[in-house]
Length: 109
Image (cartoon, rainbow, N blue to C red; front, side, top):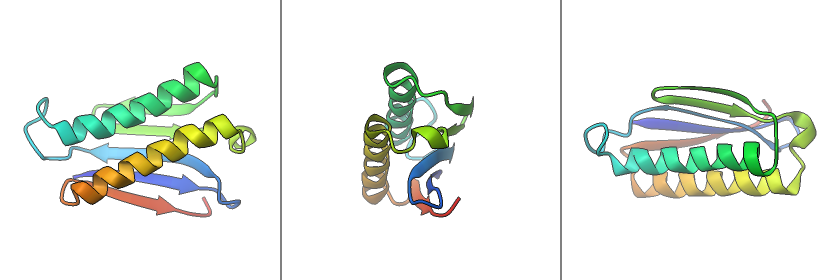
């Protein structure tokens, strides 16, 4: 199971995303569900870093990704569009593959 958590700060603004695990839909390297989640989150990271030039606090290792963007950029419409699109996309995948992807939101962090 891959767990993906989108967190909102005390002002209800998306502030970070954390993903961990393996979807288990197929063997590693063949798992299209895991690949879809990874591609969405990697695209969000690229969009934030390369397109919008947001300095991310990012940690990435095999099977784990943490992205957090500065409070000063959380109301930026481009940042909001990128992370909200990622959130909607992951939520949709979790609905389609509930035994392989767990989507969560947390508030006030």
